[in-house]
Length: 53
Length: 392
Image 1 (cartoon, each protein chain N blue to C red):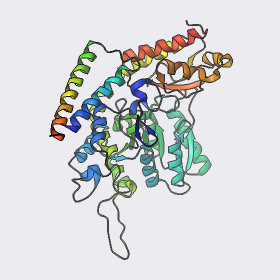
Image 2 (cartoon, chains in turn red, brown):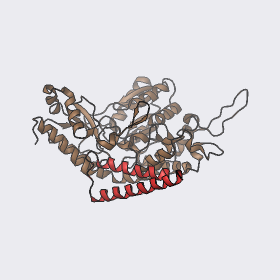
Image 3 (tube, rainbow over the protein chains, first blue to last red):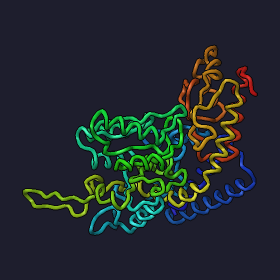
Image 4 (cartoon, rainbow over the protein chains, first blue to last red):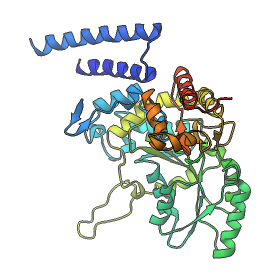
């Protein structure tokens, strides 16, 4: 799960690179960012459950 | 944000469009970044190293397969990963050049090609570039004859840049190799700016060796690169060790002296491997990269007094321009002097040209999106117009 979260962040990082310097997202990129951020929240949630149980 | 004591997190490419001429093709793919996260430890690719204990025999991760794929992709017979193109030059020079041997380089060769010749105690002879800054077959033939006349010997090796680093000009390597081979001179194709950027077919080019740079053009961490050879040359440059310890009688299996045994043993190699499928795909679309370059180059050419010093139309995205009669005239009177241009670019989120450069400088558009190319083109025009330069 650690890697999953880091890899999601990596995909977000690449999105920042392809949209630099304005980071103005088109519809497709916005949808991608939303999907990635939702995944990240889920992955961090799972980490919390596993590590803090 | 820091990633260690005194080490700031680098976010150059996240915050800006980076047009640094040597960095464009080496930016990591997402998969390479992910591989770097997982394989950062020193000997991380060696968990499953088994006899005969050599890097290019490891099957998990699939390093052996990667080596075969690399050779096949370059249409060569064997390939090894090396710590940068320069180590490829060094291995080849060390194999073929002895003290006092003449070696062909070019007037646009990278310094590491000279150092490889020097390290092998050879003597470098430069093939001159022509008025277009290209190396031609005719100039190669003339230089070989000159070396023969003056030293009484034929060069033992030729280092020829597929695309040179100064102008980003593409040389007719096939014709040059044909001439060199008429004198039995093996040819090393320096593909530091082409392998991983555009299609490279080693055998079609007539190269005995193809050298590529992972960190310059294959979206891989530094230092990384590839040295590929034909079947004939493979036996020479990738020969195996024959040494024996006089006391212990130890031998060292199939280690290769020119590679100093294993080469890339961790993050550099997996980064290169992770990017490889993307690199194989991207070279098929080099026309898109040239189209983006054209957007930027045309914008620069529209600024009165600006000229492109590289061959035109461009065949590569690394481009050298002369703005002595445009941006440099602004620098003469601007309070920031020559730094006005890099400062103005930085304000607009563009980095990568040498601070202070307003006369002759290089940029590289490789890897940017069309939107980014359009933005960059407009930034150049806006800076010019904002400083009173005429746009045609």
